[in-house]
Each structure stands twice: as structure tokens, then as C-alpha cells.
Amino acid sequence: MVVVGVTGAAGYIAGRLNPALARAGFDLRLIDDFSGPWKVERPELPVHRADLRDPESLRRLTDCDVILHLAAVPGVMACVEDPHGSAEINVAASERLFAFGQERAIAVAFASSFAVVGIPAHLPITEATPANPTHEYARQKADGERLLAAAVGRGRAGGAVLRMSNVYGRYQVGERPIVKGNVLNEFARQAEGGALRVNAPGTQRRDYIHLEDVVDHWVAVARFLARSPGAATMTMFNVASGEAASVLELADRVAAAWRVVRPSAAPLRIDVVPNPRGSIELLAPEFAVDRRRTEQLLGVPCRHSLAVEIPALLRGPAPAESPSAAHR
Image 1 (cartoon, helix red, strand yellow):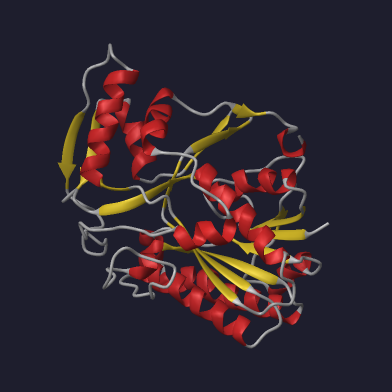
Image 2 (spheres, rainbow, N blue to C red):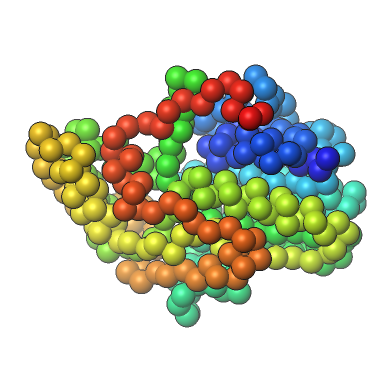
């Protein structure tokens, strides 16, 4: 049985990923320092407390064949407000983990972000688009990509970078909803109050991918790395749907879906408000992603679309998982 370690295992993405990995037949080693906002836990998939700033924490991963490294201080503002503290996790701890993996011939996959490409010189963005970070969070993720490539280049095991676009979607563990505060999830929440707040100018464009599609990509990457033990090669993956929209376009689509889902409710108002991240957020009105090579290598299509998922978000949370879901 292939042993897969997951860092940041109590987080938003990993909380949905862990049972999918178990269903796929992997033996799991799950660690987290529980400092994040979600703390997703299941009795059948225990997450062990471990702080990656402590080198001793890596001992729980010693017998792994593959490590999926999702632990991070997430978000643009968190890294701007505490660049040193966030870099201890996102850069220094990642570098130690990459060295640990190479010493033991363990392949590592790193959770990156499309934020690293900044405003690219050419569109669409491909797996070969170079990093060109413009703010602290993007710089730290770009450093992680560079450090993994360097470790693989002089090491004994492969590596993968997963550049993820804007992840949306929610789920429940028991009675507890697990939701990430990105723009689409926020619009679904704001709709209950009758108005959607669009950060100015609203023309900023992003790619949106559903959490379930993200999970499928991570499971496929675990298989991809496990198939080639000892192959010290680096692979970049674009974890994106190819569905791009400006924030204003997204708000219009949410408002249109609201009229269908809640026909008796008042129409949603769309308010353009000052952007609290305006000085650091990329406001480029053009954005497009080419994910063909990723799909070719992994054989994973994107199964979820905004047309279907926006109404689903407005209808309410996904059904709660049963306690035995990870073992069906």
C-alpha cells in the first residue's frame, strides 16, 4: 500500500481530500498544527498535531512514499501583515520538508497558487508560465516552487507543484459547515442579506475551480508521483477549470441564479465598494488558463461548472458526510 503524508491536514482543502485519498486506497499520515481557521477532523482519519517549524515534527512522515504539502499561512493579507511569521511556515518550513523528502527519497507535491504569475506577459497561462510575483503571499509561494525545484534537481525523488486558481465550494462534516471565504462563497453568504459587495473596480478577472475538482487533481497527483519512485523530475500542474470571469460578471451570474433559486425573494443589489486590498491586489481585466497538459498527464477533467454550482451554493450547504464515508 502506498503511504501518503498530508501536511495542513485539518485545512479546508485537505479536510475534503483526506477521505478521498482513503477511498483511493492510500495509507495516510496526517499532520497539522491546528493554527488555521478550519480544524477539520474525523475520528476515522485522525490528524496528529505537528508544527512544521519544529524539525522533529517530520518524524511522522518518515515512512511515506509521497507527501502532499498543503500546510501554509494562506491569504494575501495574512502574509502582508506578518511577512516574517508567514515566511517561517511558507518558505523555511517548506524548505526543510523538501530536504527531508529528498534525503529519504519521498516525492513531494507543493500547494502553490496562480498568484505567483502576477501579470503574465502572455496569455493563456500554461504550466510553463514563469513566476512573476507582485506581493508577499505570491513571493512566498514562488519561493516554495523554486526551493522544491532546487531540491529535486539535486535529490533522489520527484516533485510536483500544483498552482491552484480560486477554489470555491463548501461541505459539511457532521453538522459543521466548512467554507472558505473567497469571493464566490462570500457572494453566496451575502445573498442572504440582499446585496452583493464587489471590491472595486470589479473588472479584475480570475479562474474559478470547484473544491471537488481540486480534490480529484490532488488524488491524481499522489498516484502520478507514486508511479515513478526514484525519478527525480519536477512537474508543474495547472489546477484550474478554464472558467474565467470578472468579479462583476460573477456577481451578475449570482444575481441571475438568485432570481431562479429564490423567486419570491427581492432581487439582489450589486454594490461596488472600496477595495481593501486595492494597493496589492492584481486588477488585470484579462486572465485565461490553458490546462490541457495537466489534463493529459493526470487524466482528470473538471466536472463542475459555475452554471451548475452557483445555484447549488445559493440553495445551501452540501449534505453532511456519513461517519464511514472515507471507507466506502
